[in-house]
Length: 362
Image 1 (cartoon, rainbow, N blue to C red):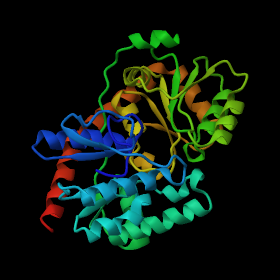
Image 2: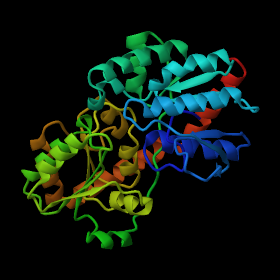
Image 3: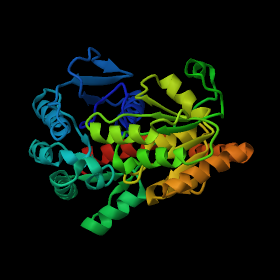
Image 4: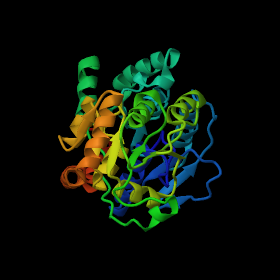
């Protein structure tokens, strides 16, 4: 598995998918190698997976591609070359010809519509458009984690992809860790997102500021390469004591309890596919208020409020505070739907069957 930060998963959807799928495949007797973007990591195995820790050039436009270049070079020169490579992120398209020349079948997980993300404006967006096109033409198989992404690949490039979503972790309702933050169950609203324009963190904060909400807004997230947008979020939250910016939270138990005990989870992502943070909120039973985008509608399947303007955020949080019982019922229905629909065991089944077909030349 190539193209992610690797495991243990501490960052995003790709890493979570690698960990959840990889450990299940090893349990079924497959040998799984995960390339990790952490040269200082001392782990060489994790939950049955073999880890290869390699460096990267730590610049926004080079980090992913440089690490994948090191990873692909290792994969094609090692004595135990892989039978199949699963490459995450279409940005890695320039390395696909190396795998093809080495005779290694490959599936590419294309992710969301990366060229729409604010951080890739200009030349970066143009690169992502080209990389998406290259991936479509070079890969032996394409993976889309949302039907909306599969539709885009078909409409834009005329090729079918394989729909494999993420799974939803089911989170228990413990709340003892909240005391360290001075929070009470169902007495706060929650945002968990990387600070980026397409995730609409600033708009959520702006809407909350204009609301009559009595419970605080807890914002988890940061922007490693975007100090300007972070400053805009801070300015929007400035002088409102109800808003607490926690930065990144790496304590997974605490993060799970924040999801599980929120009165509402406000989701602002607009350009991704099946978003892991949204699934995590649903799996925790958090009442969801989601940005009005096709991908979010697909994931929640009606078990959410929707918003597209800051004033609608204000209305949503006020509505949930005025009828807590209805909000919690919405969260429970969302959890039930996620438990039935987004199962990691079934996701692993799909990856396993795809890799076996590729290894057999099918």
